[in-house]
Image (cartoon, rainbow, N blue to C red):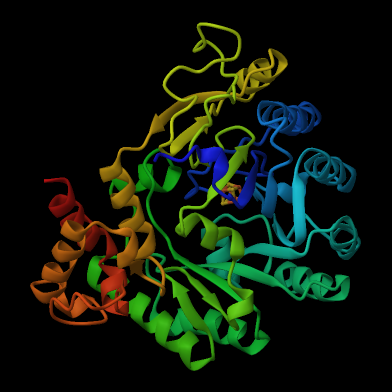
Length: 421
Ligand code: SF4
């Protein structure tokens, strides 16, 4: 018997996108604008968007939120009272579970010790600090607004405010960067024993100033062999420093410091995305729930093809802040598109996301055909990149080795071609 999605116990997460930055970094393709005059309207908008969601599911009890993540953009350009109003609204419309992980991204150069203490007082219990580097030359190349000293000040302020769960983002594999150079950043974080680290290679995203420079021949990105050396080196150095490499780009000093919110994404948990450009992932939409989306309903509030669908729905908000505000003023969710995932797409996502992590992909969720395909691939050309060899169908999970992780895209491609053929 098909189960109504509403009958399944669902643990929800919420991602709240804050699309404002002080300055645009030349490598960044996240949606954000530097005109901050719209922030007050934006804050009204996110509160309204939460209310629309809450109304859409009214009668079913509040949605239990076990993580909340304020990301961006630069959420720390909001004032303390604006953050407070957003959090109050979350608590008003949703059941934030006891012990929920509530993360906010903060950038050095936008916060001081008082601001961080206020965030702690408001209930933020995890910080993600956009440091990118401790090296002044790297910070300058990346056009970051902050200095090395401001990274240390932010860390000291977070410590004084009582944050015990925090992480920083670091960027590596910049043009001309050497392993020795990168080692200095790694030594610094290892010395600080920070609970969580996210280490990303600089990638060239179309539409960014760095990409334009690359197209004009003025920028040499990291070649695949060098990237692979950097990746393996990073993993080894941080492992030696006591960190768990639990996802391609993420390291935790102890299991309890893994990001619960991001793990929820990798495990394909349900989440609401609030704010311009935010994505939502719904495990299904019960037939009696109206999703009020502009221009799609033949009757009040109905969304044909989505309401009553037991399959997962992925939806994305418009990136136009004015259009986002207009949708909300009309009482609609500001979706600019959605898709209902087919079983093949679900399998593909499960493999793609699962292989990113040290947990890998559980065989239980895969059909027999896919399990056999993965077993065969693990036994054939890709064998060296799996944590096990041979078509051992008694194994419970498929996991990648470190060398496999750096080839994640091509491995997933091979698996997907097999699954989709
Ligand atoms: S501060 Fe972050 S979100 Fe803003 S432009 Fe720079 S990298 Fe992008």
